[in-house]
Image 1 (cartoon, helix red, strand yellow):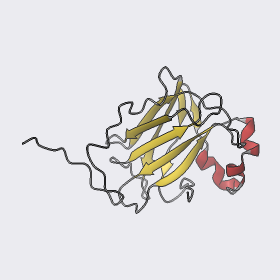
Image 2: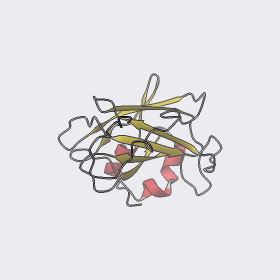
Image 3: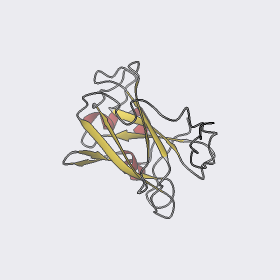
Length: 166
């Protein structure tokens, strides 16, 4: 009999080991030139080593029907990284963004958030950003780095990432 690999214990779930592997993993778009990396932190500011981060996004023309999806487990240091293309604005008036879903220990439900891009003029008119208090919007905007963007996810505490009730 084959030995089955155990998946990490989580409050959300159940997760089935055979269903977790995603063939493309963190490569959302082949040949993508946008790199998004970050770390998932818990309420004490400690990295979460066993979270699962998923992204879903529009293509460069803003179409959502292209199936641009990626999944990445965090490393022992809580880090994740995706390779993709920069999404275009969507037909419903949303600025370019990536939808993010976080599964982590201690959560009763998975969490939904978004990653927006710094300096994007369309952020000012985005209907979702508009309902987020101005002093909290920075938790939804990635930080530009030399080789891409960084988006840290804070599950609780100071500078907790804004999550949406979807």
